[in-house]
Image (cartoon, rainbow, N blue to C red; front, side, top):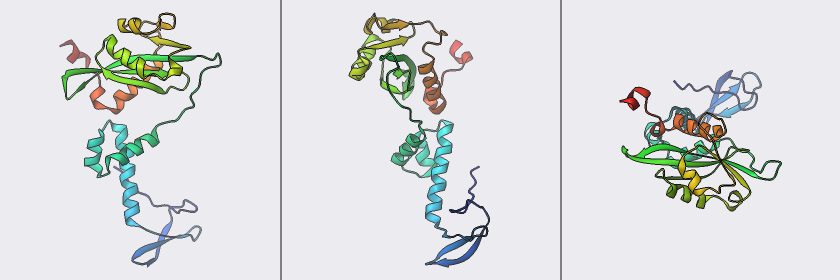
Length: 213
């Protein structure tokens, strides 16, 4: 349950007392530093709504569900989600070349029979997603991913992937480094896939008993 605690805007103390009103808005005074401030219900209510959105973003709740639950508009929810995203510097390593980790993740649209795969290309140094596409699991979708890569990543770059056959059909052979599952060479992009599954219920994998059935 979300609880709201009012603190002094100057010293951060929670020891506040009522101190009259101004234009119908209650005033409060801090007993620690004597700082006075107005209490604006609309602003406080909006802050509480935003705090609820930030908590629900951690629970794999969809954006449309957040709109229904909190009453916050979808563009505002997107802005709040972007603020929570960590920012990292992006640049080649000391040797002067880029390293991309590529992987594909199963999902669906509307119902599980409509299978699609989310393809990601992640830069190793910054852990940023530099390109992504949705489509089938074949080489045609990988060619679309290759076409969306910035020019800097199409030359002078090493590409680490798993041993799925589509990668060998599209990526430059000299720069392609396929690796078996569990080798750890694609752990960065796999960790991003894991984070997406935790935040988006559609991407959650099937349980083992259900998959076996």
